[in-house]
Image (cartoon, rainbow, N blue to C red):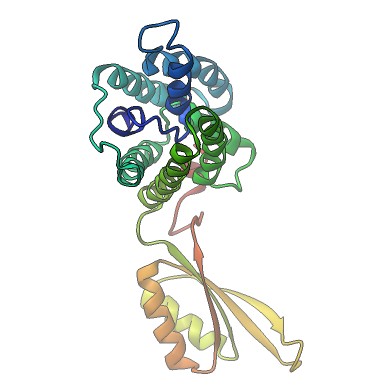
Length: 271
């Protein structure tokens, strides 16, 4: 993340959000007070102080200590790594590379149930109160507000490419956190619920929930089977369903997060 900021975002004045993005704006406004403007690592460190105080009460001691370690390291690296414009004036390449690098770094941090402070800590605090929102979505909203501020300071072109970078960051972070094999939810309306349930349980070891349903057009009463499987298992499950009941009505949806036996344990999710 520090490499992305110092090599790409800071040299091109691309405010992609986060405290480091806010620090880039502060650096511009303090250019007449401090030679070269206030270093971004100083702003990053100062702004994170109240967030960590609030985070201590919301997220608990363990989370904050892990995040403090990550934040201190991130801040130190911002002060050590030189600001080098590696992409020259290629804003699109900068947005793509910066989004991939920072998204991967942020995703790895979130996997340890911590943060590097800034908007990802703010997002974690908000998620405590709004758990039905994804972390990536919350951070995307917060960072978008900062991007608008960046547009007012550095111009629309910089902001347009910054938005691209923010989007790529959120997608890469989601990929790192959730993995490439997103879970699938199968909704199967069939008259052979017992055979399909046994076939799926015996072959891929997944449980199934049965719900009574009624077709409002035909008036027929049937069973709807609900089954959560991994992406790899979904193909096998569909083959089993087709072999048993070729006329079954099957709906397949992506499930970004599944809590419970065989998937993510709730205790780990809410740490």
